[in-house]
Amino acid sequence: MRLVASALVPIALSMATFDRLLAQEYPNKDINIVVGYSAGSGPDLVARYFAEAIREGSGKNVIVDNRPGALTNIAVQRVAKSKPDGYTVLITSGNSSWAINGAIFKELPFDPINDFTPVTSLITTPFAIAVAEGSKLQSIADLTSFLKSKNGLAKYGYPNSISFACAELYKHVAGVAATAVPYKSILDTHSALSNGEIDFFVTDLTFRKGKLLSLTTQLRSPVAVGVPSAQEEGLSDFDLFAWFGVWVPKNTPADVVEKLTEWVSKSVKTQKTKNYFSKLGMEPWVDVSGEKLREFTRAEMVKWKKVADIAKIPAPQ
Image (cartoon, rainbow, N blue to C red; front, top):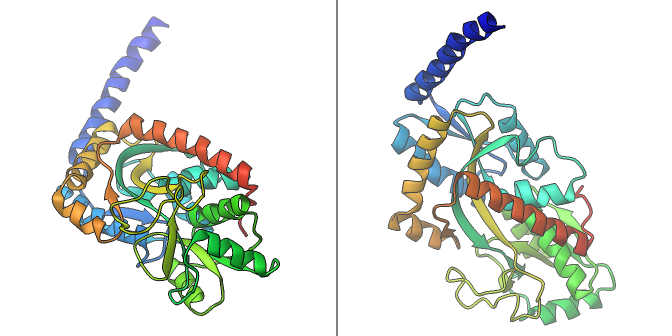
């Protein structure tokens, strides 16, 4: 037994040395950022902005790989099964991919906590309940009355899971009926709203089309001046927002994770980033990395599970 143990020691040491050498060499080829949203969407803009930060820090080409579908599950699963070497990186809205999807899908093709290593936070943004630009509706109370007048024939659109979940919670709190209609992107949903195909939807603030009746947060936001909070509009159970971060597959070497964290965190803290995202209805989310981001994710998963249960949110089609 002693001979076997002593023989294993140099092997273990050599493997550790090899891992360190790999980390020192990182990166030595293109880095891929996987995004579970279509090109041109708000999340895609987030990914492309920080892809440039990674490119500047690494000195390597960074490719954004858009893989929309299944409310980001397709993209996330791809990263989960990727080699843990730092060359396949996930940028996503954690509230959607982890918290909401974990609440509304009976089973996910990955484990949100154990299949990934959290890198660092990026930005946060409130969502808003919107109607068509030319609508005569001026408030959530107006929208509620209008939807009730349609006697169950109302419709709303959703391009992602947070939009779906927020709309279902609004229906529950307001006591209204409306059929959910899925769309591939936020732009498609905006078009449907403008064309009268749907009566409302919950949108992010990146594309400020339509009339915003209320935010989905308890407080007003500096990136949505003039738009009342959910609390002001009588939606006391609402405090829902989007948050973005960076993840890599589990077992990615610590030195590689540290490099990614350094490159991205440096960018998040700049005035340039604040100015850029302010125009998109977003705010930088600074210094939430590693285990802090993992614990925040756990808390959000608990919160959204409660939202799904309260609103009786079904799994989307």
